[in-house]
Amino acid sequence: MEELQSTEMLDREILEDARKKAARTLKSAEDTIRAQDKEWEKRTAEGIDDLEKKYIEQKELAAEKIMARLPIDKRRTKVEKIEKMLDSAAESWYKSLSRGRILDLLAVELKKRISLCEEFSDSTEKRAFFCGLDVKEAETTLKNVNIACKLEESHADGQYPSIVIETGNVRITASIQKIVDYLLQEKREELVEALVGRDFMEAL
Image 1 (cartoon, one colour):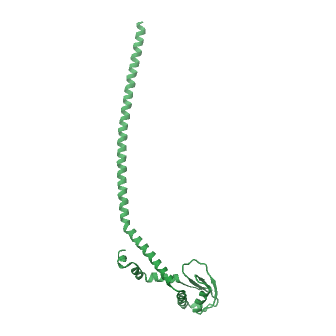
Image 2: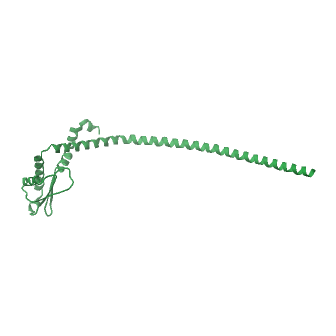
Image 3: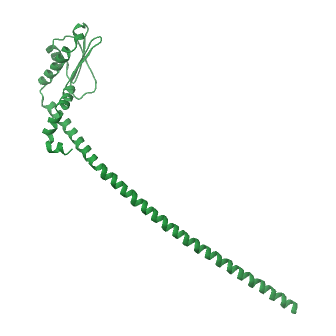
């Protein structure tokens, strides 16, 4: 009987010892978890702080870039506005011309270019291509510069009328587009000043 009691006491002692060890292990694990949680919270807080600092730095850098680019953007916007106004003015000028005046301008261009090309008068075979005109208008224009040649309609893209005369090795082009380009280049400052004023130009 004593032997049985001794065995039971031994079992209880073993179990008690095991519970204590388990309790210590669990407490140690809890302490480790709490320590890890605190470390994680610390790292998370530091990470958030770093992210916030980087965000603020990037925000400030972006603001600086925007502010630095703003004058350039304003200038570009003004230049684009002027270009649109010039194109619109050129189109309005063209629309105000009579068909007779358009043909006169083309004839003057042809005469000027032919006079600068010595090889042209030596050529016997000539062909003319017209765009933005009807056959009669093209014939009238060529007649005004004393040229008789075969006429063909060209389907080349173009906003304004044009006539191209070709020989074996010479091509002469007269077009309203070239006149517009010349005016926009040579008289640009005068045109811009007339459209937007000198104050606007000086502000560029």
